[in-house]
Length: 311
Image 1 (spheres, rainbow, N blue to C red):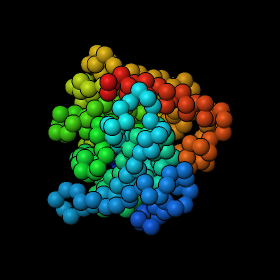
Image 2 (cartoon, rainbow, N blue to C red):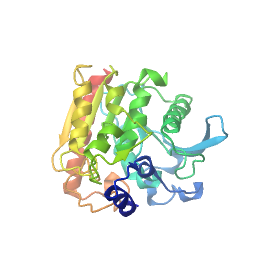
Image 3 (tube, rainbow, N blue to C red):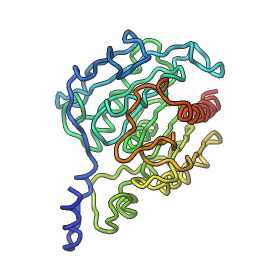
């Protein structure tokens, strides 16, 4: 695909960026076998995997909900508040590609809900910007009906930054306590201008906006931005732009430039990754000692932010 796009650029034609934004890969519910090492360390009876309705076209999205182990919760948080992380994942494959990231949050003693956008995994329907926002709202509404779900924190990684930020905006009509984005792009326009990984300056156009920076500028709730300094797919300037938009909106807001982290190994820059997400381990307990120290640093920063944000 990139070679085709490059030939179009060289011939003077504009290339539609939307074509490259979606990367959903189909899966069945049977592929999410949580008696296997996919979520090693989490008892299967704490995991709910189901399809929920979304939109007006008869579509469904797949959600995974992991009930917290309150014994893991920091004493800085009220154990009676069932803090729930609603995690929006990146553009590649489906939830199976990001299960290990769910473990980062579960290990902090939070409920975690992850979902697949329409067109990804076992979710039906078409992937569009509007549908992704609607999918995030449907996931939120599902979480809010569950027993033991209290405060909801919206977290987005990479492309998932867009639905995560949308969920925190007034446009969503939902109540969220805090927003955290990791390796998110500022907007499709900025991505097209800077080109990042594809290096096709000035040759792209897109109908999709994903105006995270514009939307974030209007969000007053606690907001944390994380971005790797060696991110070549979505350069650190995107994280800096989002930070510039939110830095004065709330005294608890934080920005962490993760030194030497790339797009794929944030928040653990010592993890060697070439092309795909690091998946040699499926749960934090499997990390070697040096990486576990980096994960603990990450979790400590997250917990410090959320303690200020929620208290």
